[in-house]
Picture 1 (cartoon, rainbow, N blue to C red):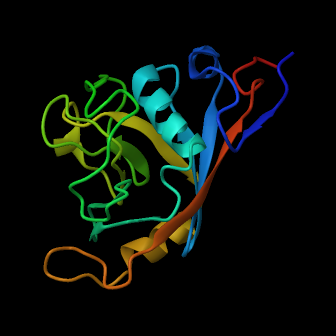
Picture 2 (picture 1 turned 60 degrees about the vertical axis):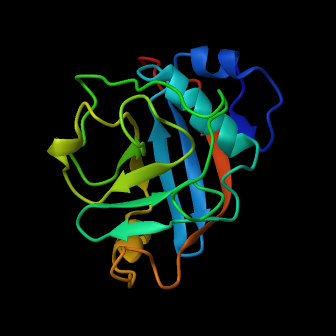
Length: 186
């Protein structure tokens, strides 16, 4: 049986990692607290691979949540902090993985930020509420499972007229967790 995995640096092929049929989760350790998100590896493997590889390589370490709109979403994942940067592991952009069964139907849904169809890079966002107008336009690849108080604190941050936080929360580091028995019918 596979051991429970705790990844700090990539040590094995991500094809193996995302090909496993089990749930994975990631903890974003931010300056406001921790947010743990489940990653939908089985449903959106290319997006999951990109996000997990960037997490494991330290790409998101010390990056700010640069855009924050109360009642809508908080966005991060851009090392430049401007909202104009970031690249995927596949090069500049990669294609959307839109699924009818994955929707922005609750607070805490995790999606890829983009500039239009098939322009996913490294930036991601967490929805503060249902956002049905985003369905089938942005890839949903996870959901918050712990750290609701941190998400609340993010939503309460003061922002300027361009939705830029005055004192942005920062992802200090990321921990990747895997539970190989999560999907077993025990």
